[in-house]
Length: 269
Length: 280
Image 1 (cartoon, helix red, strand yellow):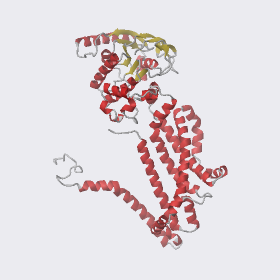
Image 2 (tube, rainbow over the protein chains, first blue to last red; image 1 turned 135 degrees about the horizontal axis):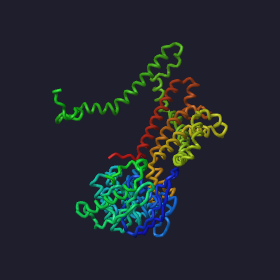
Image 3 (cartoon, one colour; image 1 turned 135 degrees about the vertical axis):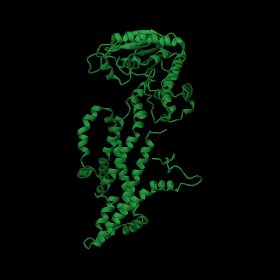
Image 4 (cartoon, one colour; image 1 turned 60 degrees about the horizontal axis):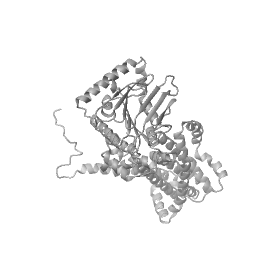
């Protein structure tokens, strides 16, 4: 099941700061849409994602999912982070079913199916610390999907992985979300990732963080990164990003960008 | 410079078809040899001390402190059951004292680990109380508790609570904030957060605190048992002194050391058991 999301004029200022991090963000996301939020570090894209997850309350405006205001986290809108953040005292299966345990609805068959889906069927009893980074992120994906969320929120979830693992996981997540008709919002600073996964890319700019433009990516899944159409879309997005963001960058942006996050700004590369 | 370097270091390269005795020797030395050397050195110092005491006319009467009479007496005390009679009440008091330390120290430790304001409020009083020797509480303990046993358990608990409390708080503060975020996102309520995330995350820290607590509790035990009671290891030591049985006194010191050593070993294996660091 999927949900429509509306973001109603969110403005957010962090405590102790005079300038807002986000200003007047208004957005509608249709059920089953795959959205990528791209922008340099410090543009507030991750802050916006935390608000969608209910992990952060905006100072003004609100997020509505199916018309209901999001005020707290819920297993129905689930977030994945750059770090897989698995619990090392639980094995793979126990990690995956944690959301179900919290909600009192253990379902071993569902977990089996998910383990199969993410390719970890024979690792279900393994210690999570014995898994590779990509495998750990797959467990986190299974854990997020176990509670049957309407909405999957990804905060640069593949940026710590090697290039091959990254692209195969991008394809897998795109495929799974299509099949399960999930709404997907992914925050990334990787243009390739946006083109590989999203059907709509929103470009954000900093100081204050706002959406400066968007681009539809009309390619079938799974997307072939070697195809001419992929390269075209990629180039088009890159050009659009450069023209939109560079025109919008005030002089102080570099300093703030470094302050918020140590991540390399691949989007600018 | 022209000497060719061996490809494999000689400690790993067993001669073809032969057994590497050198490697076994080094292994035995590291596992058993070093501890045995340590024990022998300790015994030698003790023996030298005994010899010095015995050869000085002023201290001659204390000669029974030496290892030989002490071990002879220890065997007798083991055989006639005196060691067990003295040890059992002490272990019960230690156990109760530690239990109180954990029951009070862990919840407070979790709370001050989670809430910065509580940490600030408690910082001065806790550091102040922590620095007071547990034995300084003796008069208070005697006044406050109807039984000697109660007073002793109180003194042990007062000594043992701090390492447990601070180690627990430290463990909570080291929890990855993302673990809380993810659990919240997956729908954990407060109790589930405590029971499924916080407690397993800090299990090893709690037992590391208990290990330190066992150390101080065991030290406090003996002087605490000088109080009114007529049982326990501390009483046995005091009694041996009063009756001038220095071989018994030394034998009981050995018993205290050995039991302390094993209690520490139990704590170490519990820390390992509750540790979630698994390599490979």
